[in-house]
Image (cartoon, rainbow, N blue to C red; front, side):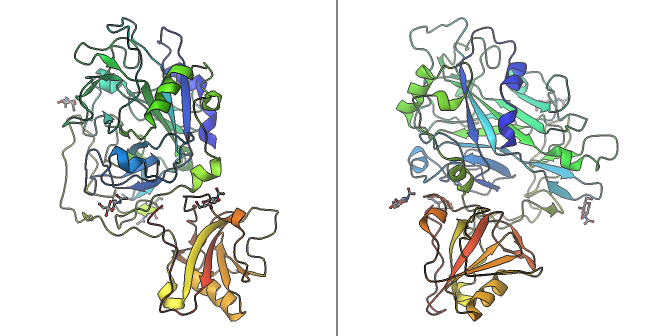
Length: 473
Ligand SMILES: *[C@@H]1O[C@H](CO)[C@@H](O)[C@H](O)[C@H]1NC(C)=O
Ligand SMILES: *[C@@H]1O[C@H](CO)[C@@H](O)[C@H](O)[C@H]1NC(C)=O
Ligand SMILES: *[C@@H]1O[C@H](CO)[C@@H](O)[C@H](O)[C@H]1NC(C)=O
Ligand SMILES: *[C@@H]1O[C@H](CO)[C@@H](O)[C@H](O)[C@H]1NC(C)=O
């Protein structure tokens, strides 16, 4: 996970003005749980205006409350007791011909939990408190397009990795060889009453130094400070700059970066979070040193996914940003746009595999592990064809009398007998795996992944052939 390497040094750079000893921990989140136009805070119960990359629990949905977070079966983040959701707009490259291409995220995110207390504490008795049930908030302002130097604006910054120099308040106008890191500090002062507010902000306030300093009297309670880092592989586009300015835009149609923002829905086990706040004070920030928490395996984090429900492409080469998001570069605030013909309906979950159940009589079993250098997960027969598809693979295995067929790495097909998939090759409990590679013979079909095999089982009859049910995950 490259995201793990840009850690303490960078944080110290950003918050070098912190006066007190700064205990903190870093919560690694391995990859997005979903990338789609959903935002259960700002656009509750409907398709969101723009696309987000979402980290955290697989209970993420268009409407959320604390009880729903607790029904999650996995999270892309490291701590088992945390079923929160963390999301930000995703980044696109804007090509000279007008197309948009998604910029790859290096890993998922690092969420810093910083034990910043009031330097001039009006409530010395209480100290830092954990987020309550049903607590949610947003940071940053999606319509903003200029640098106001307000506390809220100073909470947004961009680190150009591989270049010296301070983080900038806007998208940097130079290539970042080691990635562009988007950084967002959330407000930590609470009014002590409201779990949310109409603008999703006013129940919270920044302390005087954004993450340090003291809280205003209107918001006297102090939460632990959360800070998001997400890193984007902008170097993939280093030879594709044109017109003398940086070519990246956020999904909200923001080419400046001033409108970068993020959202948080609390899904922590609250006594455990409070214990972590009180006890996890190692200055290294290494979360594994916290005795208060237990930890997920990396492959469980990576295999944790939520099915998207908006029927549109959000990656690859796109003619426009998902939703109605023409570029608005300011300096006046961006105006919301509608009526461009983008989908507005929440649809059925988009399956992460090619469904051939009724058409060919093979049901999807799982995205199984197939580690390199070990006996194949399906080891009776194999083929590697430049025109591989799921249809072709189940045909190859079916013709030879095998009960199992598996597609892998785009072009490979493996067949297996009645024994099926060994339990230790199945995806981690509660996860659906991350098979997402297009088939060599038809990019519209899914053919496993790297060391991941998309497994199908022949049904008795096509009429009642069923795929594994993933909607409960
Ligand atoms: C997620 O949201 C969709 C659309 O609103 C809804 O149909 C579905 O039941 C929700 N899932 C859960 C687990 O709440
Ligand atoms: C536009 O340019 C991008 C980047 O060079 C390229 O990938 C894409 O195919 C082009 N799109 C069209 C419609 O020509
Ligand atoms: C700068 O942005 C703020 C907040 O979005 C807005 O109120 C203000 O009008 C903008 N300034 C200019 C010069 O457009
Ligand atoms: C997965 O869950 C099932 C059912 O709850 C359980 O029987 C099995 O032992 C679990 N496997 C692992 C590896 O935890």
